[in-house]
Image (cartoon, rainbow over all chains, first blue to last red):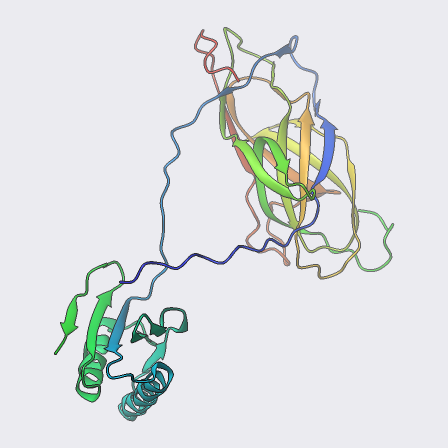
Amino acid sequence: MSEPKPQPRLIHVRKPLVRVEMNMEPVEPLDGPVTRGPLIRVSRPLKRVTLTFAPAASVRLTLPLVGGADGERTFEKLAAIIRIVNEMEALWNRAGVWVDGARSGVQGGEVVIVLVPNDTADALATCKRIAHILFNASPGATVKVFAAESEAPVYELAA
Amino acid sequence: MSDDVPGRLEPPLVRLAVVCEDVDESADGRPAIIRFPVHTLQFPGLLERNYQVPGLVLYLQLQGGFGSFDLRVRMRRVDGSREVTVSPTYRLILATPGDAVPLELALKLNHLVFPDPDVYELMVYVGELNLHEPRDAAPRPFPPVVVAALPATGAEGGVV
């Protein structure tokens, strides 16, 4: 899959910190003198885990722009095909797919469209079925299906 | 609870409570870093009783609420058998009803004494209301903050 794009800056919304000093007092008299001591921390090493929230499966269609083809017009054609595919899916009471706008567009001499199933149930089967339709409807396109945790495609259709 | 702010009193919810060593602020005074979260500590040296720790900080996020309240921190043994220490009150004024942005406080707990090695829990009260107990407005409240104090091992250990 393509390299992840830089994340936008996280905008914090918060109020100024309110600092309060409180002198704790025992509820009952203590049974002996108080001894001050250093704080001895007891803890295990921090375990760092990265959780990437990704769709269960996705389709990535790549269509090279050959012969001076206009990228934006080609993108619109493919978007129109996807709308028709969604209408076909709806006829079978299926939820269809959505275009992941953040990962789709005209990039370096080719049009890339990433599709994600609207319903996570059977997402991989949905992606494979739609990959076939798009491959047959888009001459010259390469269509790959990715599972969520996979960097490599689990299914690929190429001329 | 008191009536410094006119209107119906609504206690806040505890959204997050963490015992730590300090909270750092960013340049604009906003809380930025929770330093050294504390969940377990150890009695130093050969000490067996009445260990006064350096001032820990209870970092607190309070959500919503409306009115003026006497906020207090209480510490008890985790089995609930006995409350061991209590703070004086801090007058908490929540003047904006329905405020979506939590209020963040760093409560420095001076003179905090652990009577003996045990597991303790810190709780925040407004008036006599324990904010960690379920109520209609908070059916699943944030739990008390647990701190375990282990017995001394005879060594000074990893002193800060």
